[in-house]
Picture (cartoon, rainbow over the protein chains, first blue to last red):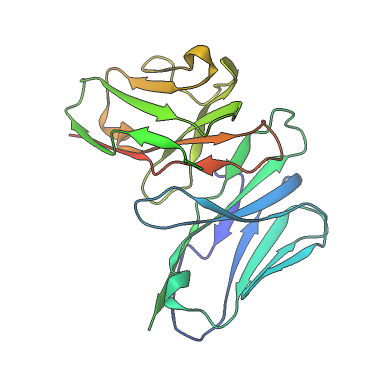
Length: 113
Length: 114
């Protein structure tokens, strides 16, 4: 059972459309991270959110951390084929002192031209 | 700056055989991680080292998996004997310290057990 539940599992959209992926948990996290993983490569960190209610923007990507620090969302505006990849959320639980990063199962995003 | 290096990239073995994966973290990074990523799932932490000491190996199947980080730099992950369900990508990662620092992943070692 994944501590972090991501939805949807798979998303296929046309270039120029918007999309949102979600990351939910019943546990509280001290911080949440979003990664993108491309085929044959390791995950690459996109952003870290720390404060409940925090919103961060990275060009066309908007990340939000829930007020209760149990959930997060990633919104992509005007998606491009280069946004294709596996989007993973990961978090540090408040009860974990050694920094064990917990990952969700990921959302596979495919953007077609 | 050189990234996290892993080898081999690909390995196919028969069940009950053994295999070893090697990782060289980013220079100066005290924390080293081994993750297992099964197709369609997110990475699962197998073991975390702080320098050459183990700080978390709660999800490492110790009857068949072992890992060491001699001298607090390179690390080796071994599987013996391998099972079909061990087919996965084994990701090595490193960070400056354990918590709150960016974790950098290697490209992974792809294992297929037949």
